[in-house]
Length: 292
Length: 336
Image (cartoon, rainbow over all chains, first blue to last red; front, top):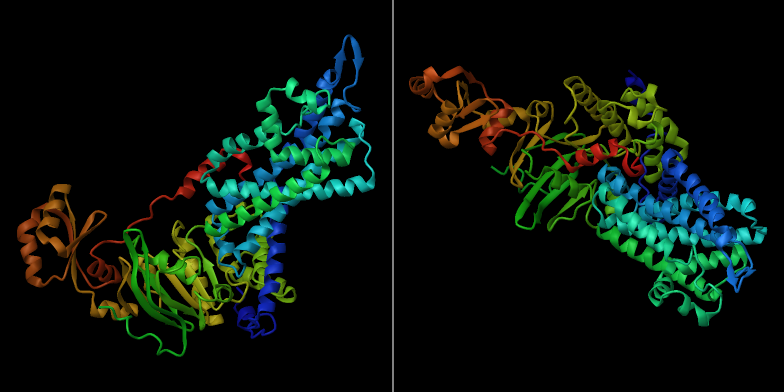
């Protein structure tokens, strides 16, 4: 019992804070942004299941899928074996596996939004002096940071798949990965605000993640012979159309350009699509979060 | 008997000013023009059955819900016009826990301190003192998910005070706690109120808890039915009443039918309000052989409540939260 401790007029620590200026409120937003971000990071670090998934997924894709299909990734022309593309299949899917890991982690991070809503923590932040936008940006930044780290797990495997990356390429890749993570975490928030229960989320997120991934020219090049004229001949038109519509295609392509110096599209288009997608998802996320 | 109406604006020491708040959800009128004011350092209770509008009222005061009309001010700041500013003065303990149970006790408090812009220089000292008050110093580094529900509630109270709030709102703070934990919660509330001059607003449907408050406001169907100190309410509204326990449900139904409006059933008992000596004899003549017990009771807040609302305070219904919790316990979807 420490009645005395409270009773003592320790004005210094319980001093009233009557500063209601916009400057002070702005400072609180910054501190709050950091608090929300830090909380997301801490929660992610304590989620062993998610960490394990982040490690095992790329291993599975690179080791099993990559090594397993590596020999088939070449064109056989009249019995004469020739590499269709100037790199191995392992190298080809490596940037895509980074995107896959980011996709999973970003969209799954939206679970924390549902969690917060169902378990009341959202109310705790909603009655704090933080604006809704601050809370949302903090959450997205936190989720994006975690997703980017999961993308980095894959980068660590670069040596084993014969991808040599220059420090400059790493920086560009990290930049692209961050923008992508931010956009996809926003997408997760949008999904989360549309879904009321955890039960639905698992199914739904797989319905979003896997189709987006498989139709992003991640596991096969859009054009087997790498000439535009043949692409439509070799793959059915509907598949090519889907791949072209899928914005993730351009994100994978941008990352490939940076990491293995191979592009199927104009790099500028890639960056525009990546930036545009992120912006659109973020704006919708803010709109949804304000409404909710 | 709307004793709260008409006294707005005149109270200079008022910490909370509520004027004509109204809120409607579709067809249902959740609040129909509620007005009252709460003075500095007062322990104020909102008493009413579930669905009476208590939580709606509290949500408006906490700035998470906008009313259709009316105004509310806390510490002189209009909660509708300056919600962010108003929130700096209030601490809230929700009906359902709102802690992050993956974080430790002190991490929860630190998060709160950051979100409210508590200066780093005083943060740790405040946390230490408050944990001391609610007797949680020993579990400071434990993860919240390992705490009991009583401890969680105490932690929430401590958290609501980290930013030196002037008004503390508690929505059903003792629901789901055992008698001993409930006792502790009220002990802390009283002590904080005395030591810090805190203004406390509590909603509850436990009548016995309201007896400890300075002032009680009885609400039902979104209206203020009565307001005053527990004693005042008992004197002005509570009358002697008869508590009988019928032998079987047939007898219960007959008694309820016979007394109509005056009778209210609470669990096994029937309470018949406003009885005189003759009424008792009349009752014995009619139903004397078909009851197990009979008591003539002096006015209590329960009788006040029954007189005003015509029903006994009910228990909580299960929330969607429980369903989610059971799913989470199966460990689905990295939910934690």
